[in-house]
Length: 105
Image (cartoon, rainbow, N blue to C red; front, side, top):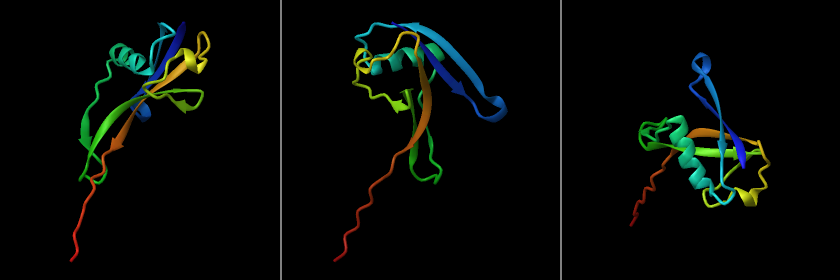
C-alpha cells in the first residue's frame, strides 16, 4: 500500500512543508509507521519546560487521517486507508501534570 506522509516543521515564516511517499505493508501498526516517519523526517522527541515552567513537557509524534488521531495499536488495514491517501504527521507538546496531595487533619 502506498501512502503520502505530510509533515510541517517550524512556525510562521520558518514553516517548512514536507511530503514523502512511502510503501507500506497493510499489516503494519500505527506504532511501526510512527517509527518510520521519525526516521524519514528525522524527528527527535525532547523534553522541554511547559508554559507554566513548573511541569515538564514532552514532544509526541501523532498521525492523523481523515481528521482522527491514529492510536498506536491500530493496524493500517483495519482503518480502510485508501491507496495514495495522505496521513498528516504532527509533533505536539504534552504537559505532564503532577498530582499534589495534601493531608488536612
